[in-house]
Image (cartoon, rainbow, N blue to C red):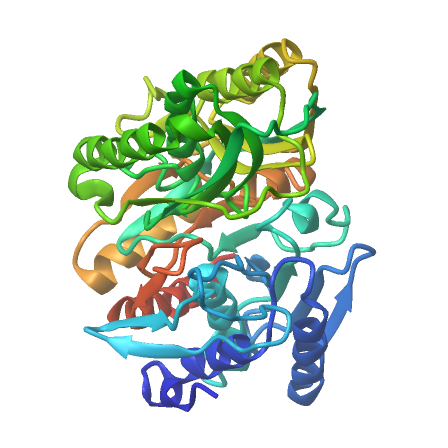
Length: 488
């Protein structure tokens, strides 16, 4: 599978990426890939071990004469986001990712590509295999479950890593280097809401909101993209004029992906359905106008169901209170940074929302450059949803990565980037949860940077990587490692 990747340059990197595409690896299902990498390390004669959580480390001794160089940790995560287009049958636990090349970019057929963070992992493996690379002591750290919980980094063994420098290869912009990132936490909302049987005068409408682009809930949160949960709640609120009662709801699949689709069923008095359908059609026009070219694929469809579902609708009051809370919940950019121009400081993504048999579940992902702002945003959720009797938990919190613009590693990277590519890199802080913040809290002595090739559409089936940027990324990585090998 994906044999065409062997023809791309640099061949060493793309051959390893082919292995990653052919080995299913959604979050929580990385075991087969870990076993494959361990077998590969054995064949290469490289030492490897795991910590108690299952994070994998592969080590390579320094090149002759470079034994006194600072130890370098090359870090990436093995898992990928599992997202497929509606109607595209794909089992991420069993099926390989099918790729194709178009206009200088590598895409996947109907699914996420896994370039996040597969390109970084492939480059690390290529470094370990490259016989011509001069290097100091190397450790390759491959973490687990980054996309769902940061579990690998959060549970990383302490006093395990030996290096003093860390290269995180999980960034997605060409010509940029990252020295800081947002922290975050999951906000889980659960409630059992009162329901009442549908009356003889009521019929059911099923509504589907589809066609949005979706995207990464951190690096894309400031873009003019629609959030399917936010928009469908707005549609449902418009139906309250017809005494609509919510029966079921399913929107979004991952808390760190901006939802592309959402679906709901509502009970409405039969004599109001025609007017309700007209209102829904009118809202599609309004929302398309508001979204503009930023997300022009929006579609809202609605149809009557011939039979009532088994589940009871919420009571009229419960339905109204729930929709009011969801409509009022923070969503998108909350505040831009005053200290780092153009960077989002605090945001929230209404990522996964469901209602089934009166049982509400919402998972939102709060991010901020300030850990205190994460706490404050989570507290707002607790205050808001507490009003409807919901239970709110804050879980999987992780710290941000404070920028160090004066680090020696950054200075070395900037000098090499300028010499190799003829231009200085842009030094950035990213509004996403790079593992560097967590790793730095466990290993505070580490001097860290993050960089990578150009990736767009991460966390969505539009994910793609620019092929030329991979070669530039590889050349930069090799040159940087050789520069570091000369340091003492």
